[in-house]
Length: 357
Image 1 (cartoon, helix red, strand yellow):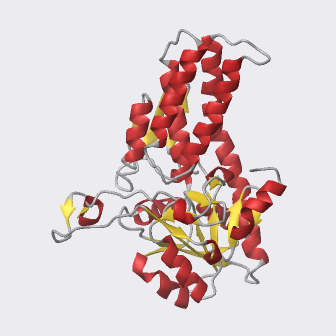
Image 2 (image 1 turned 60 degrees about the horizontal axis):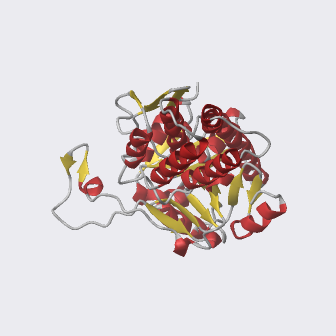
Image 3 (image 1 turned 180 degrees about the vertical axis):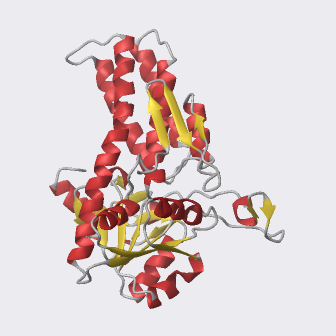
């Protein structure tokens, strides 16, 4: 049974506190967008798709408890709340993409083209749009997982493949299936997976705490490795592909992902191991031209110097970027999407041909 990190019924949202995993499974309520913003900022929920889903569902919950006097008043409220949610984690693009889409829907509703909405009817339209994101995300990830697995197998003669992954990209980072971990899950379901190597992913240890937890839950053969062991693992453990997620993909195919991703991509290229990025189309940001234009979030120094409240470092200044940028030329396997696998430097062109950007 796939792990569930988001529980939603209209007017009620609970999320799994990922800061407590793997030692404690605790769900807590999100009552409004302030709660949603806080949970995203604190990384109680993380992963670009999950951030957007929780952010928008927090808006849906708040709207069920809010009365507005007019559609224009609703529009101002929705736009203000969405702009606020975007500020919680600025590097990831999925929340911004969702906000843009919901604002456009709200604008059409406000114009009343084809139908004049009451404030209550307009509110319900926005709530339903937010709610639809859960089911859509699972469907997208399953399609993505199939495309990615088939592409890897087509380019590998082995009956079972060994995969390396970084950070957490599974059920805990999405609505319930996974992006990079979704590819791994598909390989496992079809008896095509040999072994998985997941990094600890310092300083927040999403690999050690979350990916390892998911792999054990799914009974997938796996080993946890230190971040600093990635290059050595690629050399001696017969890794057939590296698959990671993404928080933003720019027009030229550069990709922002959890800090440490770029150095694995460099090592993978040196060892001739295909490096893949797996993400839904909502992660693609054609308005950002290259990785140089991505705002990289910097996290508190305490994330490096403390673990579970225990100080582990000397009193020294820290630099703690949450993400790094992997240049398109290092994404040698391609970018795996729900529409297929594309070369990183061709993704904008390919998606335009498909009418998807």
